[in-house]
Structures are given as structure tokens and as C-alpha cells.
Amino acid sequence: MTRSAESTTRRRRREELLSASIDVARRLLADGGLESVTMLAVSREIGIAGPGLYRYFPSRSDLLRATYRHVLDELVAHVRAAVVRQPAGDRAAEVHALTYAMFAWCVAHPHEFDLLLSAGLRLAREDGAVAGEAGGGTFYEVAALAFPAVAAQWADGAVRFDEPVSPELEAELTARRDALLAAFPDAPREVPLGLVAAVRVAWQRTFGLLCMTVYNHVLEPDGPVRHDYITALLGDLNERNLALFGMVPSPAVRLEPVFAGSGERSGS
Image (cartoon, rainbow, N blue to C red; front, side):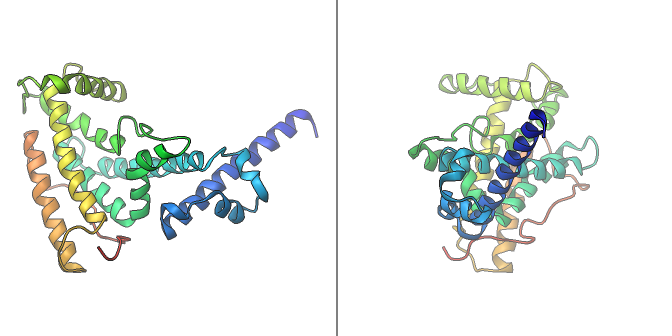
């Protein structure tokens, strides 16, 4: 075998082991939660003896970081696909569908949600924190998908946001706007900071209900009654968020059921 062929074989083997390790980590995560994802458990599953896995992931934090990125990419792809399914140019439908798709995925993947939410906190105590890996905060890449629609609303004059933002928030919101404009180069360049602040408000409202739902903090009966109650809360919240941007729910929206294939936690 030539040196080039040997190098190609080693690279392919490395890529296969990296992929297999992340797949096993995700399976362990889904079955037993974050604490079940250990270097020893993953090594056993993929058949690497002793400390061999450390050649590919120098620490558990590195393994979790790679798993975190894989999970977040899956969530972003899921939400992006829901947005693309909406009627072309229907901004309200895009924002509405984004919210429901995010809820549905997180409810069906509670331990993955736990990883995304707690990675920056838990891994910060270890030797390789992933804080900021999501591009500016937890789930930031998902929230950012709403930006083109709401920025277009502003460009069309449907909303203004002329009021100045608080001085203590100005630097943060400016950095966030710069990141959004870099991610979406076709968006209007002059969007006001007030619009970015409104997106943040809408996101915080939504994320609060999402955390309460996944962690079973909504004190209603289990089963369909609870599901209907949370879905109604989400619908009301979504209408208020849309109204921030001069939108009303679209009759053409294609929504994903929040609790289809639910994997939500039991108990309180």
C-alpha cells in the first residue's frame, strides 16, 4: 500500500470512529441523560480498548462538545426545513412554523435539549467549556432563523422600532445585529437595534414556555389535557410575538404538532 493510500485509510478510519463515537454518545444521552455519556461507556460501545478514545477526544468535554454540535445542527436543520415548507413569502407562517418545529423537536428529545441548554454551565466546570458554541448563546442559531422575515417586515414599513434601546444593552444588541447581518447578507442592512431587541423579547417568552414544557413544570394533568393546554398557551404566545412585528397568524401556515412522538420527561 502506498503512503498516500495509507494516509487515506487512516483518515477514513478516524472519521468513522469520530462519527461512531458521536452516534453512541447520542444514544447514551437519549437513553440515560447527560451523566450517562462517559468516555468508558462510549469506548465499550465502539470497541476501543483502554484509553484509545482519548486519541480522538482528549477529554469528556471534547466528546460532549462534538455531540453538542451534532445535536444543534440537527435541530437547526429540522427547524429550517419547517420554515422552507411554508408558502413562499408568507413571513408570519415562517415565524409561526419555526416556533412549533422547535417545540416539537425539543419535546421529542428532552435529553438532547438538556445538553443544549446546560452545556455551557456544566462543561464550564470541566476542562473545555462549550459556552458560546451556538453562536452567541443557547439556541441562538434557531432564533436567528426568524431574522430575515422580521427584518423584511421592517423594510416594508410594517413595523418601525424607532425608540432608542437602553444604553446598557446597546453594545450587546449591536454585536447581535452584526452577527445576524453576517449570517443573512440579503437582509436589510439598516435594521434598528429596537428590532433586534424585540426578537430577543419574543425569544425569551418562547424559551421560557419551552423550558417549562420540557422539564414538566406546567402543572396540569398528564396526557392529552396537558398537551392541549400547553399547545393553547403556545398559540396565544405566538400571536403576541407575531404582533410585535406587525403580523397575524397565517391561514396557510403548516404547523408541526408539538407533542407528536413526544419523548418528554415523566414526573415533575
